[in-house]
Structures are given as C-alpha cells and as structure tokens.
Amino acid sequence: MMGREILNKMKEKACFGTPVTPDAGKGKSIFSKRITHGFHLMKGKSNHAMEDCLVSEFKIVESNELGLFAIFDGHMGHDVAKYLQGHLFDNILKQSDFWTNTENALRNAYQTTDKEILEQSLQLGKGGSTAVTAILINGQKLVVANVGDSRAVICKKGVAKQLSVDHEPSKEKKLIESKGGFVSNIPGDVPRVDGQLAVARAFGDKSLKRHLSSEPDISVEIIEDDVEFVILASDGLWKVMTNEEAVESIRGIKDSHSAAKHLTEEAVSRKSKDDISCIVVRFH
Image (cartoon, rainbow, N blue to C red; front, side, top):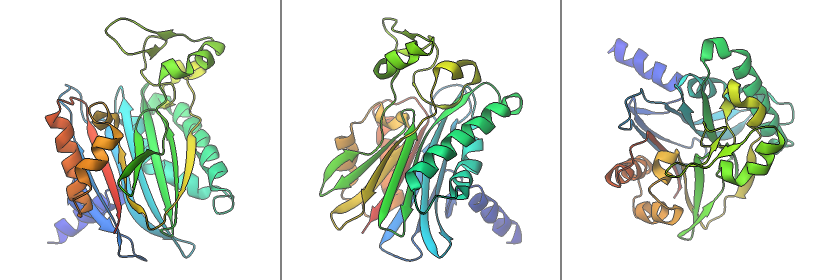
C-alpha cells in the first residue's frame, strides 16, 4: 500500500494531476467544484518512443487558484518536452509581473526557458518541442500561449473558437527568409524550415534556431456562463479533426477524462499515426 502511495505522489509531482493510469487522469478545481479537467495520452504508431508530455493540475499560488494546462509535443526525442513539463510553468510564475501583466510574463518566460534549453543542448540533445499552455486564473480568466502546432480550442454555446495560432512555415516564410533560412515545398511533403522542421516556431532545435522563433502568440478569454469547455491537444489530433468536429464530438460527454479519451480514440480511428495527447477542461 505504501509503495502505491509513493508512486501516486511521484506521478502527481510529474504533473500528471490525479492519476488514473500513467497516461490518463482527472481532477477538479479546489475553489469551484463545477470546473473539472481530464487528460489522456496515446502513443502513435511510429517506431520512436512517446514524445508528448503534458501538465494538467490546479494549484494555489498567493491565495489565488491557478489551473495549469499544457501540451508539449517533442520532436527528435522527448527530452525538450520533458524539460518544458518540469520548468516552463515555474519560470512563468517566477516573473515579477505575472499578476500585473500576465501576457508579458508569458513572453519573457517562454524566451527564458528556450535560452535554458539551448544552453543545455549537450544534455537535452538537438531536438525541440512545440507547446500550448493555458493558465486559468481563479476560474475567471484564461490566458493561452503557444509556439508550434499544438492547439487550444474553446467551446462557447456549441461554437468552436481557436485560441492558439498554428505556426506553419508557409505562413512565416518571409520572416524565416529574412533571417537567412528557407522554406522547402517538396511535392508530397509539408513545408519545412530549412527542409527539416514542419513548424515555424518551437523550443530548442539549436541547429535551426537562427531561423526559428520561440516567440509565443497569446490570447485572453474571460470565462463567462456561455463557455462550456476548452480542448488542448497535440497535432496528432488536429491532423485528422477540425475544431468543429472535435467540439461536436464531446459536447454530450460530461466527464472531462472521458471526453479527452474519446477525442484520442476518435483520432486513432481516423488513422492518425502520430502521438496524441489531449486535455479537456469543462465548466459545468
């Protein structure tokens, strides 16, 4: 029994929230029992190890409740995604202006964390990671930031609204070229930065960093009575489902973990071969 308790505490410390299995979990707000969250991860059919990591938890900071939610989709290994899982929110909360200018704090923390990753490239390797983070402040204000193509989508009165920006190389071609890079467009393949990376912004990727940004796009959403839920997921989901399809498929599922699991299984049924990680935060 004691061994199981220690294992559960280790999982919680690793930002897996309330554990159901190592790849699934759920929990709820301490202040408002009507707000729940659930997550589910599923390894893709590629021959490399699972590269997705996530954070899904509520915590009390300076008498305020913060919901901390994030999807980190690694590439060329999971070390950078794992580093982000353990450090990004800590760096965000260390910013002196977090409570007064949350958006600025997020920008600075993203840059600081990317610098740390690049400085530790010998240990962390040459890979990188996308990220989408969502901070729910006292159940009232949701601040979303992202680099790459992991995505956050909110459902308001049944209508899907994307809160993140897909950073595709084709959309940022001029910026990449202004830094001396190029965007390949080979028939049968997606556009890639310097013929390698399929996203225009990411953490890490030291060899591409001169042409690659880690500047996040940020959006703020006030949580009112018409907000039903928020989905955060890696591109393993979004490659095979539109925002509207994802929202519609879980509107009738009240349990947050069941909703996240349904989305991952639906993506697999639609032949997604990528790793899939999904978080659903529901406002009952």
